[in-house]
Amino acid sequence: MARYTDAVCRLCRRAGEKLFLKGERCYTPKCGIEKRRKPPGSQPARRRRTSDWGTQLREKQKARQIYGVLERQFLKYYSEALRRPGITGSYLMQILEERLDNVAYRLNFAESRSQARQLVTHGHIKVNGKKVDIPSYRVKINDVVTWKESSKKLDMYSRMSQDIPRRPLPNWLALNAGNMEGTIISSPDMNEIDTGIDARLVVEFYSR
Image 1 (spheres, rainbow, N blue to C red):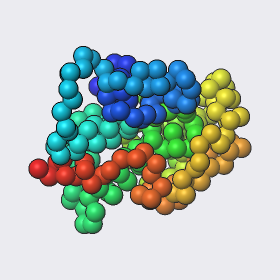
Image 2 (tube, rainbow, N blue to C red):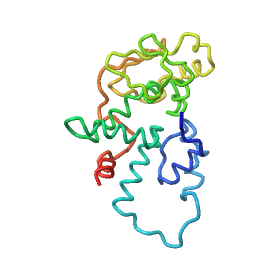
Image 3 (cartoon, helix red, strand yellow):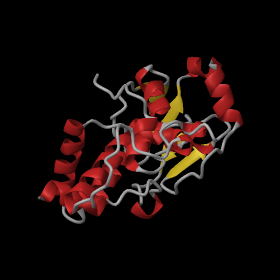
Image 4 (spheres, rainbow, N blue to C red):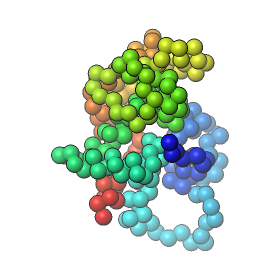
């Protein structure tokens, strides 16, 4: 399974803003973009104005990096959103939010999406009582997402369950913090997605 393995703080510095890829660390002075705000690599003496295409590309890359999706899969999601009637950008963001690793992150099962992805890959998460180890698995309304019973012995489970809630829970999810059980009660609402991604620019990039 392909994944990005370089230093993720470089991605934030390249984007020029925090993408919150390392969980709690991003809120501390240890955050890479707090320590070095300049983009990685050698800098030109005079920076050129970013073109419209460059702005669209940067927004697309930002969306990919936040959700931890590689280009081929991201393009597949865009093609699926394009086939649906309605606003393509809204459907694209909805598809990304419905990924199991993102849902585990939204439910405060992990500090970051990459950590949630690892939880899913290692088989610690169940959907409707069955173990699912595919981070890209798409949840549906009324699905119940929980920890595997044996995984509740992990130190991470104890830490995350004690600190609930760490982040505000979106209205399309419900969480029983007592047994760390989440339920999908509706489709993701664009107005609640706090990633700061301008989906319109992403659509414009692929529409060129």
